[in-house]
Length: 378
Length: 250
Figure 1 (cartoon, helix red, strand yellow):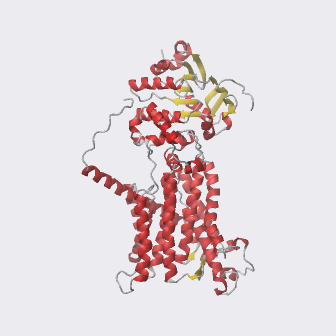
Figure 2 (spheres, helix red, strand yellow; figure 1 turned 90 degrees about the vertical axis):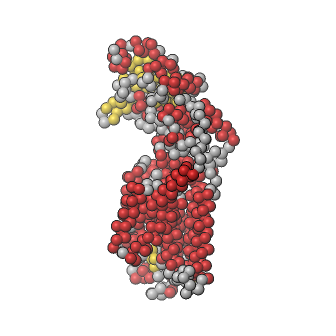
Figure 3 (cartoon, chains in turn green, purple; figure 1 turned 90 degrees about the horizontal axis):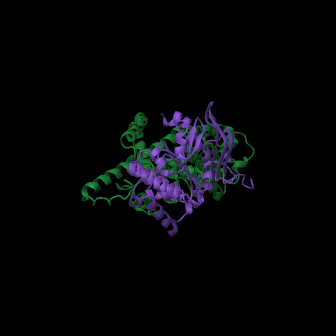
């Protein structure tokens, strides 16, 4: 039978690499002396942590796009909502240490002359509640959005356009001061998380390790989902949606389930991202961000789960390097990369690598004994 | 609804469908019995595919009645619900899940709980395996079980799709042009297979290939411009003046 175990060879490699990162980064940062060429400087740790969060976001997009054919151009919205939920917790932790020293209200509310905390900010001073909201808020939005979109059988490019419209609408809404999320400036100036100072090198190392753990967990969940019979139905929907319907599957329920799960993964990625970059503002909802995620997935290899992780890490490392050396040309490079991959490596880096590997294997192996003569009607 | 209003398995009465003023089905009436095989013939645009669309819930008729087992109103149900009732459909061009292996195609079609939670937690059972083995044997694809369905030949895909249909254990199979693109030998084998299926399940076959229809040796319905032109044995239908005029040609 073709059911693979969750721990196939690819998964083991991914998990080993992630484990290595989770060990190496703290060691190179903390245990190696700052003068040594192997020392990882403090400012690189949150940068790497940021890449890992992006990798989790890319993974969540691959789950729906690579396996179910749902091309979301608005996944940045779920990422940002998870980030805002975490940001609200961090804002409440500031307490009286803000510029206006109000024990309850965040600075921007004092500045806007608000007298009391809006209802939707209640509870966010308690970490477990905020952590729950990191999952629930993106999940509910995805569920409601998907409920209407999938039930009306909106598919393909039309669905992509409305996901893009969704994130754009949210961006405009979050820019408004009276939304109560800090408007243009967003949420920032965080002090500590669960009592640990957020700027401290040790906190950043822990956040990095947690991000890697979340990525590994997300990867395992996705692998389990796509290897199950549920995952086979997703691929069936991707390749022949109406055939799947005529087999008796409620396609909209499958899409809704996987879309909601994916949004929750994106929310977790956003929540881990915010304490490491120290700010969340409405620009995270920008449509271009969501499109960039799709590029990471395409570059790494759609429908492979491991590929998007690789794609997100490579493209973002490239971005950091490029924007330092030739800042004006980064967008051209990104666009060129996308065109290059689409034309020459339609299955992404991982797909191309697998093809090469298979070809090499063919050449090295002696010719296989001819296939058993088919007994089909021929 | 309570008491069946008709003993027929499938009962269409006065069904009409129009698309932008074009009447694809025009007061079509048709009844198919339990374990009956029926061949549907007719020129292009006669409404054969639209009729299948109505039966499987893809298209809602503008008027008319469509009943399954005398009590289920097909016009009020969606594709998934109709498939669950026991109507399976094979498309004109073979539609299989090309990226899945042959046995996974059968697995997905096996009659089972179709809810997302059930499939997420489902475990492969020995009984399932036996069912898959038996079905692969029946459609002669055992040797190809691990290949991707996309790699199969056209005829093999047609057979795989019939295998998927059987896996659903439907009470009624709708089969659109099963012999299209097949060699003579494959066509004859397909006719054998369908006759075998029809011993236990009702089958509606849409086909253009008259030799194939003759091979089946069943009651024939000829459609024209969205309604039934003639019905009866193939000989009677082919002798019908109007059928000769619009379809068979002189």
